[in-house]
Length: 150
Image 1 (cartoon, helix red, strand yellow):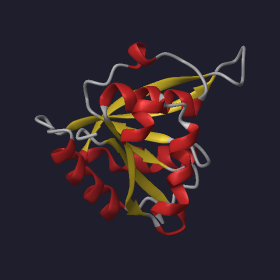
Image 2 (tube, rainbow, N blue to C red):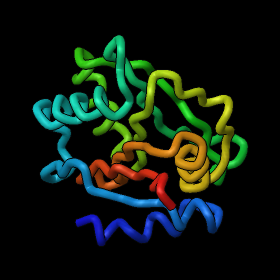
Image 3 (cartoon, rainbow, N blue to C red):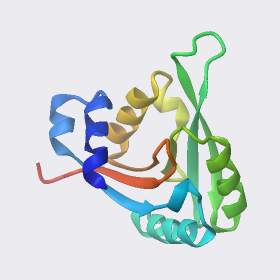
Image 4 (spheres, rainbow, N blue to C red):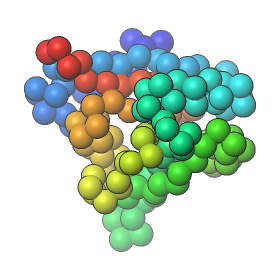
């Protein structure tokens, strides 16, 4: 499945240097795009390690379109934890066809700014070095990261 998503790295508007370091793995697969509680809890356990969660909270981030310019999106953020599975499931289903990012609690939407969704995801990757991304079809969570050795 990862091969089918490799092309996303080319549309994130990454600099040539960052693109050369970018890697992608399909972390989780969700049958028919449905966010089963058990899979979300597995995702949470992975995030605990990846983001070194001390208080068990992380940022869930999604895009809202600008009223003035539909080509521009801005980020919305909510801090969630292990007990917020129902919220995540509802958001997942409500935002079908859109990206959702799972990021550290410290993620600041104001630093990244607004823009085209793929461009913003690319800026987040460049700034943080790694991210978890729900695909628009909801079938996978992608782990996108920069190789530090290159």
